[in-house]
Length: 357
Ligand code: KG4
Ligand code: ZN
Image (cartoon, rainbow, N blue to C red; front, side):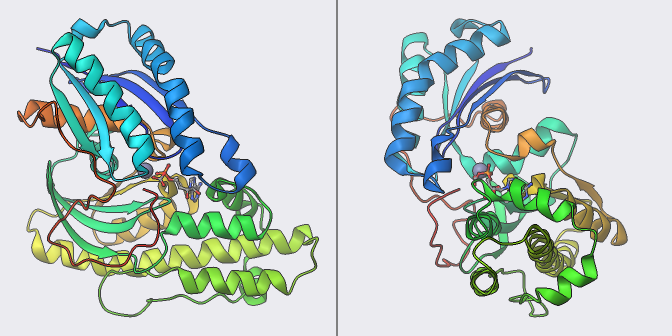
């Protein structure tokens, strides 16, 4: 029998509601971006929580209408229970709990990162175990996805996340927020790759070292130093070149770390078959092309979900909920929220400065 799940995501700056079914159909997928963040150059927790509260009820109603289903047709309600900005998470969780209480629907408290990790099983037929590069504004990790709720983290950032590096570079160059798309657009218009690399020789932290951990803060500092040396009104040509040089170095860092990760994945999993990318940074076409190549060179399939399922959305939460529902992994109505919630609790704790996911 086809099952339907509602998904609610409010852990960061997007208010999102979706409905998916067990046949992998996305019946509704609404995302409301909070553009006020642009003014502040980042996410302000209080503003985000208030905006979620103002919009969530209308967005739920709209998603249900778009999907053409009533609350009594739902087999489960999935909601992000963390990690993330706790005020926002609570808005989503209280909404989900209220609907579930009224209609007697099973609840699933979903880890936002598991939403990103399982998205590819909504869009493609991908079996476990697969190697996942999760690159977003708050996280930069490499995981072996062994099953629903079963993750082995083999690499993580020791300081900033890749998306954060894009956002900070963009801000430094006056290109606005979120930084990834702005920097990518500039970089794509660069027709002088060698000149850009020579003019802006940026460092590649961790490259060549064993293991799969990342570091981006040195890169960010180097961009700042180079930007400071440019005129206040940065000439367009320099903007384009520095964006290209930055993106190129990020691609080199990710490639180096992923090569090591693929070796570990193949070593640990005799049935190694696929490399998957997820998280907002996965929208970047140059990074996708690089990942596609290193996977193909090593005989692995490479899969990246469509762009709008890479950035934060609720279809991924509804789907993670659906996977759990099918395995009977539902939660009690009094489940807790978590500001921090690692996918692999056995992985060593590494200092993560960002609260974003
Ligand atoms: O997954 P996501 O929507 O939210 C978080 O959970 O963080 O990821 C947002 C991040 C931001 O840092 C944004 O700059 C980055 O993903 N991003 C990109 C691109 N689109 C979004 N980074 C590089 N290239 C892009 N095209
Ligand atoms: Zn995310």
